[in-house]
Length: 116
Length: 110
Image (cartoon, rainbow over all chains, first blue to last red; front, top):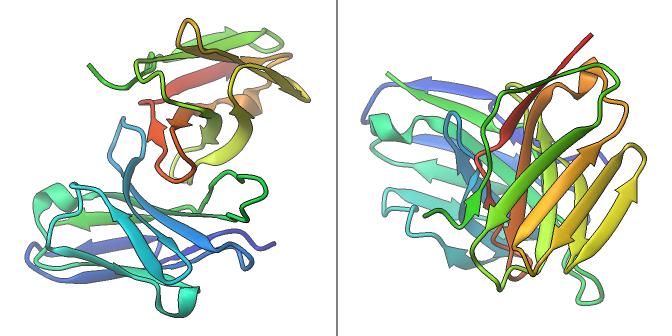
């Protein structure tokens, strides 16, 4: 169990640029989640996948945001035309949903996005 | 009013003290209750996971859920300087969308 891995750890970009983050979940986990955390706040739910299917998106996820999880393995989160308000920590989590017992979410160390 | 309320602290205690951290919530449909610890520039680390009401103990940590009062607590016994971190409570109705508190910053003084 190597844990949830996120890359890059820190991304600095200019306003208006596109950015993409990657998340590798714990290998046997079929659910993958994206959250956003700003300074002094708890994480806020953005979206989640069960295998390759994206099952829910928060209204926080504007049309500039898109997430994918091809083949139900790693996931990417892309932000187009970044804005100052996008500066935050983007956290990925994963869990195993087996239908027998519900397992909690385990988080990665996040990607910190800074918009200049 | 936020769904989950948590005092941001900071809370400072001497080493060896018993720490009590709390959250209140408004949504009576919450069934799953979690506590995470977060160090600076790190992701949340799961400490406790409970379903419905009652107590759960794991080492120095005890989680309590009182659904009638919509109140959850985390107790840390024999606190150590290494326990200094932000503690986040989280809750969910189902199993996928966690609602987090703002976190309480804890400082354990040596």
